[in-house]
Length: 454
Image (cartoon, rainbow, N blue to C red; front, side, top):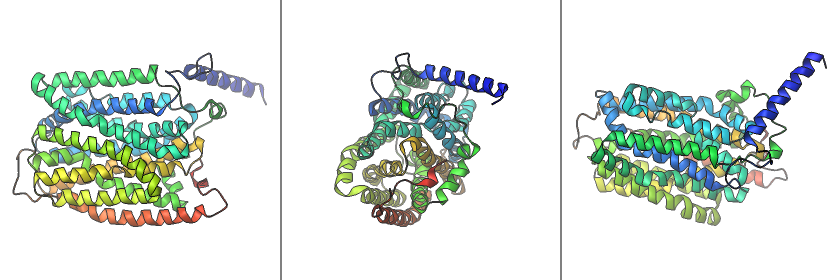
């Protein structure tokens, strides 16, 4: 090795040691309070989405005031850009977290996801612009799921993923109602200040309390390892998906599952206000009830189902509930039907944690960030396509917020398009599970999918 090469290697080694000192204390233990646990991840998710939940009612008002003529269309475009950017960035962030650890990327994703919050009252145009570009780092779930995978055994992951997903629902149980009440009593400015304070609390919690979860024995060999363009390229991950029939069909299932949900979630509260005539208080109460039922579904019900009927049938059952709730929302014409459909929607929330547990079994311990980033990237793609599609369809049907309510309008609209998608999804899932069951009879490890290696 040349003298210049030796100097370069020593410089790289010094950089690596400096970076390691930032994350690891002198005693060799991870920074943070206690050992890494699922509860650290749960608190991070809760605070982030509680802050955003407070802004549910104010966001609807600001959205309509900023874009009075094309509210649904602009809502779809804003969420669509955010989702597409998430799709493009998720593989890189997932791969980097496998090399450099989870904590720094938890901090990065939470900071940029919550960055738009204080801008709501400063400048609505900047607020929506920053929301759009924040999609580059809006992949907290992929890092959190990788964090959980680091510290749980395979048989524990479905329950742990269910707890994380239930926490997301729990954060929305009271926050929209609290935000609506505070906005009505003291003004939306107070709500924005409170949401900003909670976001800052989340960032401080990550800095002070969250320990690194990626085992030290996995990181030294990876420190300083270059990240190739193939790892950063989101389309490369899609190519990898196509190289293995199991992964391909699971990812098709995720895509077809989340595409209608992404569109539904992006406009659902506007849909309740516009078509069904819900008041702000009714929307907040609806979110609270749906959140409570989702918590029960993703903790107690999911655990029972995984033990009694297995991973495959749990996902199939969740997809069946999803078909039912989408059709119910689409064809329902009375407010009570929306409440009943909400109960079914809560049961359908078991699908994603069950799929995430299945996906985590397909990768080795040092590849959890990659596979979770891949799934998050596909969901990000859905977050881009779904809202844009919904916004465009509402625009075609001339559904706007300046005519509240519209009792003569035909309920459903985009909601009815989802049932066909769900049927294709069930077919894809059955095929993927067929391959998995067949592979389980082989002598080889059925989940060592080399196509996921970068």
